[in-house]
Length: 258
Ligand SMILES: Nc1ncnc2c1ncn2[C@@H]1O[C@H](COP(=O)(O)OP(=O)(O)OP(=O)(O)O)[C@@H](O)[C@H]1O
Ligand SMILES: [Mg+2]
Image (cartoon, rainbow, N blue to C red; front, side, top):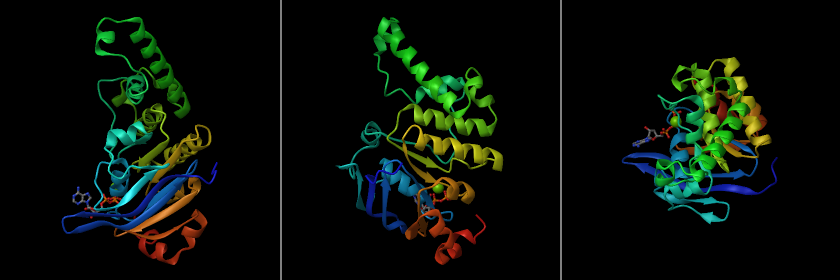
């Protein structure tokens, strides 16, 4: 549900890596309750923009506003405390941990106990641990992995590991979820079920999403707004219908081999 409130505003962002201008005058406005897709050919600057939004890369120029806060200079942990959670282009699942334990790591910031609590197994430790476990189980149910909760995470097929990554990300109760190519490596059936889960994250959990993705069918089916980058510049923005018809986008991106 788009209530017309801006949650994230990237304003005139430039990023220079040595001689490469990775982003040039990029602005993007993400409305609360929407899925805002960021698309473009390889090397267009999509991951760099996610890195700037989350504070992992410092912009050369420009500003990042989150609600009314100017977070342009804020450290990544401050942005995560404000409710930004991201996933990475390369799948990251912790080995030697069960599926449930993997998801529980996403909720660490919500359930607090001290080292002493955990050493002495205090009542506080048990109650926080129980809440964390329940929250993680609920997220596993949300993505449809509840039957796999006790398996070793690395034994899951790749498609399920992608869902696990999503469950872990939403376990931190994000305000803004940034997904970097969540469907990479998935087959069409897995991609469409992932798409349904991502749309449910917006519709049922009311989490705003920035989606970087190459799979056009997925992007067109669940996005509310699309921003198109090419060579670090915004070449178009609009609804899926508008973007599909935009000649410059077709030339730069949809007509390419991606
Ligand atoms: N840390 C870095 N140092 C130097 N150059 C970088 C760095 N990170 C990215 N770049 C360059 O910035 C440009 C944008 O890269 P970026 O990874 O943001 O593209 P992308 O749109 O995410 O591409 P892909 O679809 O392949 O993931 C590329 O030319 C890339 O080589
Ligand atoms: Mg990338």
